[in-house]
Amino acid sequence: MIYFEKVSKIYSDNTKALEDINLKIEPSEFVSIVGHSGAGKTTLIKMLLAEESPSEGNVFFGSTDIHSLNKKKTNKLRRKIGTIFQDFRLLPHKNVYENIAFAMEAAGKTDEDIASDVPHVLELVDLPKKAWNFPHELSGGEQQRVAIARAIVNQPDVIVADEPTGNLDPLNAYDVVQILKKINDLGTTVIMTTHNKGIIDEIGKRVITMEDGKIIRDDASGRYAI
Amino acid sequence: MFWLNLKRIFKSGFVNFWRNGVVSLSALLVMIVTLTIISFVLFGGALLDHTLNELKDRVDVNVNIATNVIEDEAFALQKQIENLPEVDFVEYISADKALELYRERHEDDEKILAALEELNDNPLGAVLNIKAKEPSQYESIQLFLEQNYPEGEIGSVVENVNYARKKEAIDSLNSIIDASEQFGVLLTVIFVILSVIITLNTIRLAMYISRDEIRVMNLVGADHSYITGPFIVTGSMYGVVSAIFVLTALYPITFYVGPKIAPIFFDLNIFSYYIGNFGQFFLIMFAAGILIGAISSFFAINRYLKKNRK
Image (cartoon, rainbow over all chains, first blue to last red; front, side, top):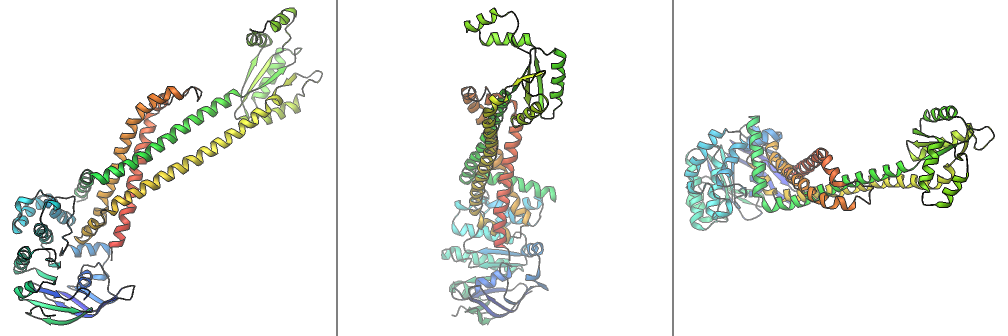
C-alpha cells in the first residue's frame, strides 16, 4: 500500500534527514516508528503527506507516485490520509463540531452527511457533549481526541500520527492509543511515530527504529529498543 | 457543489470575521484610516477644483472699443473673437452700460461722479469682455487682437486691451493652477499608495496569525479556493464595515466643518458636496474597501499557501 523506494532527503543546509530508505507498509498494518529526535521520523511522515519532496527516490501510495501529483491530486490524496499531531493543530476559531466538519467540507461532503457523521465520530472519541466547545476550552487529551475524530471522519485508508501522545499525561496517552488500536482493528492502516516506550511495548505490533536518517531495525512485532 | 462551496466560504468568512475579534478590530482601524484618507483626498480634490475654477472665472480680458465705432462693427469683432477656439464666451457691454457700471463702481467717489456730470457725452466706449477656456490662452487671444486690431491706431476698432495690465496676475495664476494640479495629483497618489501599503501589511499580519490554520487546511486536503475563499471574504468584510463607518462618520464631520471652511474656498460647502455626491462616495468607499481588503488577503494567503506546498 505505501512504499518508500530508495528515498533520501538532503535539506538545503546539507543536513541529511533521510538516507536510502526502503520501506513497505501493507494495508491494515499498525506501524510504530521510533528513534531519537532528529532520527528522520517526522521527515518520513512529511514525505508521505507530500509536505516535503525526496531528494532521491520515490514514495508510492498504492501505485501512485505521491510526488508526481499536481496540487489538485495531492489534495485528493491527502483526503485518504488522516493526520494527527503532537500539538493537535485544531482550528482555533472553530468549535469541535466545525473542526471535524471542516475536514468533511474539504472533501466535498454534503451538509446531510456532515450532520449525520460528525455526531457519530464524536461518540467514537467519547466527546459528544463537547461539540460546541472551542479548542481552548478543552484539555490536551480532549483536543487530541478531536484531532483523531477529524482524522477518521472521512474514513481514510491511512492514519498518520506524529507523536500523538507527546503532550499528554499517561492516562490520556493510553486512551489515545486505545482509540488508534480500535481504528486499526476496523481495517485502517496506522503509522505512528513516538518516543513513548510503554506505548510501543503495550501495542505489540510492528516497530521500525530509525537513527541518523536510516532504518536500523524493523521488527514485525517488536518492542521499544534504542 | 459550486454553490454549496460558495455558501460555506461566505459563512466561514463571516464567522472568522466575528470570532477573530481583536485581529478584525486592528484591521478595521487601519482600513478606516485608509478610507478616511481616500475620502479626504476626494474632498481636497473637490475644494481645489472649485477654488481653481472660481479663480479662473474671475480672470478676463476687456477690449475697449473706440468711442467712434458703431455697434455693428463692435458686434462683428465680437463674432470674430467668439470664433477663436481658445474663447469660451464674449460679452458685449454697450457704451451706456459701461458708463452705468463705471458709475456704480465709483458711487462713493464724488469727484469722479461730478466730473462725469460735467461731460455732455459718454466718454466711455463699448467693451468686449472675453473669457478664455483656460487662463493660459489669453496670450494667444491677445496676439490675435494685436495682429488684426492694433490698439489706438487711427481708424482702429480697438482702443485698448487691458491684457498687459493683467498679464502678471494671469501668469502667476497659471503657475499656481499648474502647480496645484500637479501637486494635488502627486499628493493623492502618495497618500493612497501609503495607506494601501499600510493596510496590505496589517492584513498580511492578520493572515500571518492564521498560518498554522492554513497548514492544517492543507493537510486535510482542502482545495486552494476553499482555503483562500474565507480569508478573502473576511478581508472584504473589513472593507465593507470600514466603508459603512467612514460614510456614516463623514456626515457629522462635514456637517460641522463644511460651513466653517466654506468662506475660505469660495463658498463650497463640503457638507452639501458630500450629500450631493453621496452615490459617488458610496461607490468609491465600498469599491476601495472591498478591493484593498480582498486583494491584500489574497496575496497574504497565497504567500503561506506557497510556503506550505510541496
